[in-house]
Image 1 (tube, rainbow, N blue to C red):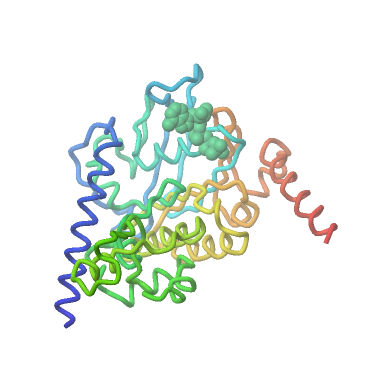
Image 2 (tube, rainbow, N blue to C red):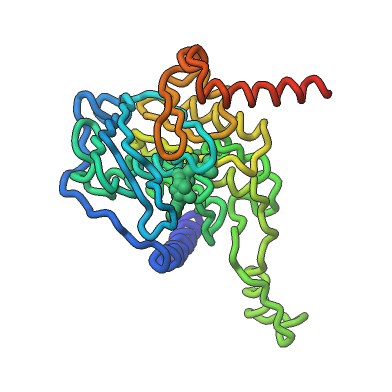
Length: 335
Ligand SMILES: Nc1ncnc2c1ncn2[C@@H]1O[C@H](COP(=O)(O)OP(=O)(O)OP(=O)(O)O)[C@@H](O)[C@H]1O
């Protein structure tokens, strides 16, 4: 029985992956060149010493290919991100935060300037290798036409049949609660099966009617529930033991304040051996424990430092922090 279920799941995953490949092939144009060096840990670097990926950016500029803007998305960014550090990028809309995350994750290469990863030019590394060692959690992260279990299992396909691991990842991603309330639990299909309602099959005890019934589209998940499944996939990814860089780019827009807080706490609990970079507009609880805050404006880094250092500077970060703090105090006063 277990073998039959495993074969069924494997076939289902294969079909799903073929669909995903088609979805991606049609949309993604790879504009970066692959490197020739495997991402191998160094004593100072990631996997071996379990200290996380280290970055050094030297005069990095970036303009989006075909973008409408006359000014670059990133201008002359120079900074260090130490292995194993917790970094929070803050700043106003359009400041370049997500673009910087994409450069660090090697989704794009700089238009000019250099990025060093573990002391070596990032362009020299094989892209797949770098991506296998990185986990990116963002609003762009997708739900795939697979079961809930498979959507989570994609984070670490070698272990996608490991129920305990899937469930633990769901707990960490804040998804276990609502999955537990689904009739089919982890076997619930997520999109995009169509409801087959052919009149020839109505009320018939026909094999096709049975199949059509099984294909019935399940109710859509809410935005927050989808984000929790995607978060669970990221925690599954951590279990591969390979992840040394985690980029978190505002994954929580559809989460309530409690959901976002829990998600960030779960991520921080998994910090060991990883460099973590967060982009969020609701940053107060993160920046106070961050090793480095990077404050961006109009494509430039305007301030970097710790929370006490930047508050003492009384510049852009202090302005953004005080606006948040005031909104919080006003809310508390009106309750
Ligand atoms: N795919 C894209 N193509 C063209 N231009 C883009 C693209 N993505 C972002 N930009 C532009 O690059 C600049 C920086 O955008 P980015 O998304 O990095 O800012 P951000 O600080 O993350 O903003 P937000 O806080 O609103 O998410 C903006 O001027 C934006 O319009």
